[in-house]
Image (cartoon, rainbow, N blue to C red):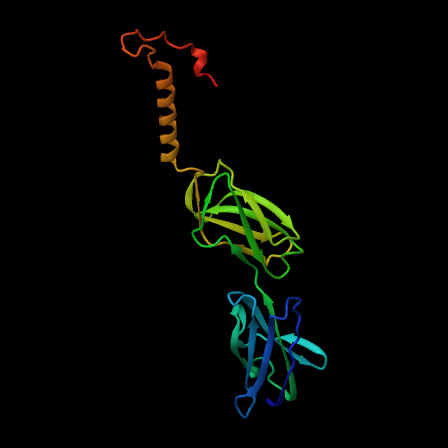
Length: 247
């Protein structure tokens, strides 16, 4: 096998802002027999550098496009923005080939959950906004579920056409740690992710609730049993009617 020239073709399939692009693509045959080809490129994301992408390498020959599998390096499911190099072992996929070759690099944003952030504290009865993004997530119906210790606790909602959802935390949810939000697509199996772990607490700390109750009881008792006679010799009033303490 001998590859005489590598012609680079990059297909831009992104419908996002100009902050994302593939640039500086180059290919180099690494040996005289053309058994290994090195393809370098820069994946640029000026919007969010923490985003990961699914990157695949394709060959285009005589109008036919085929994905290449004997590859290593800057391909796969978790590629971040930056300079990358792909090594293609050409002889493992095309044992007999001579002439020109074209490549296509495809990069698709992985689905990921942006919010909640790690160890954020949420309180029951309060509203919190979850946020996510990823390829195809706006057009699919997404299912949101609450997990704790990798166990499903309860459904949250189903949404479509949005990349965020505001959730009022039910008061029935037990306070605790290691909670996670899971989001998955009904139609797209590649959309399935769990958020970073967060904490759910009571709306008010338990000690504050107990202290407020004791204080209220003390005020009621003082109002009921204060004597009218400043000398303190007047007998205590009769016990209050039972209805006084009813809500």
